[in-house]
Image (cartoon, rainbow, N blue to C red):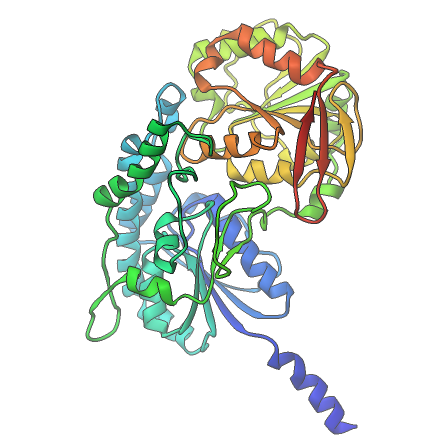
Length: 468
């Protein structure tokens, strides 16, 4: 009996691995994604260490991991904190009225890499901490591929098995390194404004965007932390990775050939059970019961509604005023709304919203959003199996209909990606000054009885269709 107990004790240990998840704290969505990877591995019985050096202090009060207990922080240098604040305080408001082309966002990307150069110095000045981590003898290291200091940590800890990952749909340079075809003539670039149905000129632009970006932003070389302190060539290491994780869902993303080495885990940060069971509190319950239909408006945490041009705000407010029977919840980060919405009774302007709970509530009729990947994943996973919904009626299990107004970075791609499934209507940010256009789209999505949304989501599979 003693031997049996001994074997039962040892057997589970033989199936667990020792993981290091390296995730510098510089962006909310990035950390949420990697924290979920860490928690998923912890829940599966593995030993996981979440190493999260601070870059931007504004996120330090957020507890990103739940089941992962071993969390290691590292304070930034003053210079790193300043660069992190500079990156976070980059003014994206210009993109409300300006194209966010690759040329426009190059300065922001340059600051991004400047941040990692300084992070590398901070890590090198804290080798005692890395020495303690080295004693853990990690089996696998997981990190975001766009964070070059991760390779210096990987080299110093001498971890042989590693999984570079991306919190965006994919990193074309990583795909190139592992030998996966990218096909830019058919698949839109991650920050492209095109869909998969491109004209010849759009295919040409999409194809040359990658070499242009690589020319202006070549991969920087980072030195090893150990003798002989040689430069680490990321492009040479990437093909040696065991797997890569990408934040892409093959059921809603553009179809493309992939290797088995590319494990697509898009939506992993979406807690499906929470989405299905979360409830609004008493305050929001009253708001949702005020009128027969309710529309939620939110442009995320990066592009703020308060920074929107005044003519856009006025046009939106005018359009909403034409629907007195509909309640509008507009996430707005300032108290100054009199200049564009004075006297309009059916709009509420909260500075914070329980977005997940509102999206999961059947009384929410539509969602006006910017097309961020997090919101797209949340809405995609809110469907129920074989549910047929008439947008005119209120049914308890459905995916809220969407307007999408992509503004910046990958939002254009995300919006058009979801539109392929007929689950949303896309309007240009330049049309936000046209109240008649906004009113027209609102009327279609709220009152067109010929529009029916069918949503089927067995597990993580999304299938949405609009039937006319």
